[in-house]
Image (tube, rainbow, N blue to C red; front, side, top):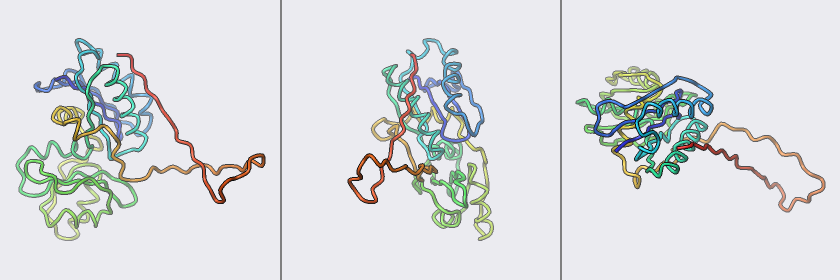
Length: 248
């Protein structure tokens, strides 16, 4: 099976192509960035695919990070992944950013709890926890740091992700044994591909994992005197649409 992995959910734009039984990706590229994912993604994918024999037609599956992360970034990655999968007649699966961050720690023996945490700002984190062998202990959720620490138990804790320092500070202040393995802000794209290879489309759908409402303020609509309102106090909203086309 040949997998194209895409990640735009966090402060990076990344893609790689991996044969599921190979030790290393055929091609991979990653660029750290806070904004501009939409403009950077397709050129990056095309550069990666230019190094792959058979190109887009050789893909069997597309794996895309579904969050938690940036509301806009998640949508960008999913739109591109769905367009590529459709054009290539390939399967598509979703991969949790928290699972991908935790993956390198789960495969190592550790007598405690592995937790991946992403800084969600305002003293909160997106967090998920895993036991031996990757057994899920805490499903992805958005919590205050102290609340998250209580949910993780008495330790010892092995932390990864941009939210790890926040959790570690709370843990040390309460005498919980803790170690930060990594503070990387985005997962290794090769691990996204490996998780995507192991996933099943039925249980890992490529749909957004939003744990927080988007930080968007809609502009106030101006009344139109020529149109009578049918409901007092009603509100109307428009749903933005975005389309990404990829020539396979």
